[in-house]
Image 1: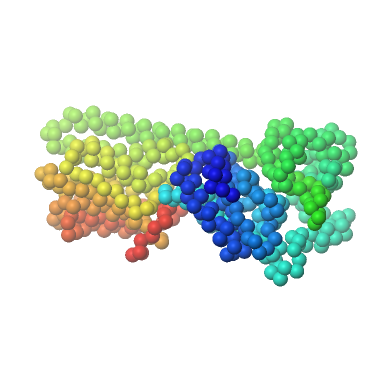
Image 2 (image 1 turned 45 degrees about the horizontal axis):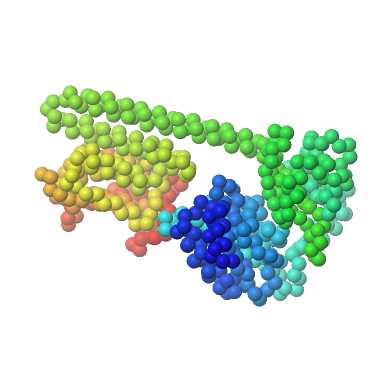
Length: 486
Ligand SMILES: Nc1ncnc2c1ncn2[C@@H]1O[C@H](COP(=O)(O)OP(=O)(O)OP(=O)(O)O)[C@@H](O)[C@H]1O
Ligand SMILES: [Mg+2]
């Protein structure tokens, strides 16, 4: 394994940036140490662009034991069905321990997987520590084969096959087993039904599998020990998993194929996709309708005299703009869950446009994320957009009279169980404690919608609003930093 290999593979197969690749290269250098220290095999996998597969970009084996991997697996693909832990960590960003997996050599191992993140907290790769299951079963190393229990199962099947259905008979998936000559030696009932549907052959037992199911040719030609592929045959979407079976002396004994009919699943996926298109269209309409209301108000505003009264219309316009910003962000959302809103982006959009539209050239804006990325549902985002709107509006309206210059600071903090948003200005501070409509709206939204706490007070230099609200399925923080004062 060289730096070049990692870089070449990442450039060829992934969407990772040069700086992401450098992070992986740095970690890869330490892999042999980890392997020696833990007596386990170490790997780094990256997701392949526009695909559900991962690819191995780095590896290190320990020297003290016979390695599970006979040959290098760098550059080999990793399928979700065989290594679920790797895919789980890639997609959720969480660690996973003790997941069973089948290696590219067809061996059973146990994997511990941790995500590797870049400076933006995005998962760019996974670090995998792997242990052969046979050694996990039996630390004394008396047996070094991993066919644990297979003999017992074989005896059991042979004895009971005539009287009772074996496990595979009960499964919906199609199980086919061939001998080394690719002749069909076993098919479960689902397999027999499938072959009858796909082939005109009168007898199927011991027939060449390619005579029965010629569309499997590419999969059988593939040299990989384990291989997964999706095909469309006679308007059916099927997924074929192939595993080569070997004897202890590594002689090819046959091939196991597990075939799953994904037609219904794919149809459902298409339906869901259609639904999400419809939801997007609804969001579009909500956004457009809000903008129409704002235009009507703006037209009406021009006719208001004296012009000081226009300020009330302006405030309402800002409130409408804040809500429509939520929908604009949802619509711009291509990659993540459609209902997710990036709260920091939303806050930045609302507060900066309020300063620009109101021509407050005397006021600066500082947003400090503290390394947090806060994602909320659109429902919570609408409430937070109104809260930010009212508080920033207050600072602009009350904190800097007679165009005194000043700054509004917006800061995000994360704690174990809740998020905290501070909106502070270095203005004149509040003279009284009475709430009018604006602060009443904020208080109600924080307490009722966010189920949180709201504090508004004059501080040494200006006014500070603190909003604390619990983390939940609808409010999530992705971060690496946690505040010490939690
Ligand atoms: N950042 C601030 N700096 C100084 N005074 C403030 C600040 N925020 C609020 N205040 C004071 O608190 C009062 C109440 O604020 P509140 O937002 O409830 O009402 P408002 O801004 O006057 O009107 P609206 O209902 O349109 O928001 C304000 O009138 C103002 O005197
Ligand atoms: Mg106000």
